Every structure is written in structure tokens, then in C-alpha cells.
Image (cartoon, rainbow, N blue to C red; front, side):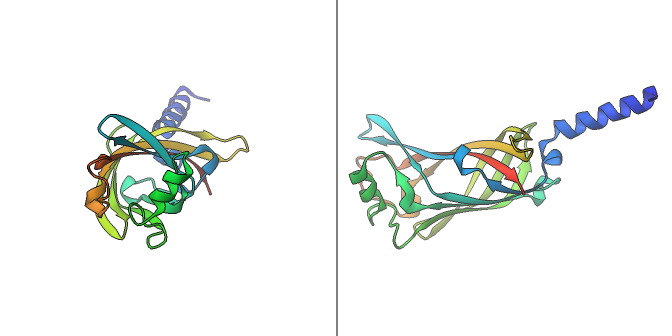
Length: 191
């Protein structure tokens, strides 16, 4: 191999691995075993407690051009889990998630922009309790590569804050903070 071909091959490989979107363009399915959706809320302005959602799905499409990417995410509200059955049942009630009337919490992206080597700004609509509000968050890619079965995987995480009252969840605003911090950490498998 000539020196010129060697340099071109090296540059091509460097470009491919330097850009995870180029390397991993395609549709992705969630690996729910290695993903998490958690939240943090302050109680009595004293301390935080954490909860999670156990049932969620996604429709994710990473494109070579980030603007053509799509990120849709659905959480089953009834899957809320704070490790306390009584509290979880209350959270499923009309005081909070109204899980029977509004079984799904949904996010659908409208715009994806690359902002750094492994970061993207994702803007879209969050629907909770039948109310839809725009949100923007930073998605940080945490890794991409071959999985244990030879499949292509990628991982990422975001943390963002929403206000419960923006969605009509006003119960116990004097005891529980209006602001809730959400963390979504996903491992995805290319299809």
C-alpha cells in the first residue's frame, strides 16, 4: 500500500469513528435491560427522593445529518415506582399522573442539532396529563460500538427539569417541589 493510500485510509477511519452519527446511522430499538428513566423531587423543602418508570419504549432514528434524526419516547405512567406501594398507588391516581385517563407520557422531537463532539440539542414536545409543552434538552452520547452479539449499539443520557404545574399537576405544591428533575439513560440497538 502506498503512503498516500495509507494516509487516506487512516483519515477515512478517523472520520468514521470521530462521528458517531455517521458510524451509527439507522433505526434503533431500546435495550430496556440496560436503560433507565428516573426522576428526583424535593419533599417538604428538606430532602430529595427518587423514583423511576419501569415500562417505556422508543422510536429512534439517527441520520447522517442530525436534522433528519428522530427521537420519540413513550413512558407508561402506571409503571411509576418509588419502592413504596402506597405512594406509587397515590402517584397513579388523579392527584398526580391520572394513569387511567392519561396512560402515556410522550416526547416527540421536532429538531435535532449537533452541538459538540458527543452532544446534541433536541427540541420537541412533551405530553403529560393531556397537556403538550415544548422542551429542549442536551443529549450526550456516552458510547457507540459492537455489542456482545455483534450488533451495533449506542448509548446516551440526558437530564432536564420540568415544572409539574405546567402540565396541571398541582397537588401538594406546598409539600413537593414544582420542579422535577428527569434523567433518561438509554442503550439502543441498531435494527
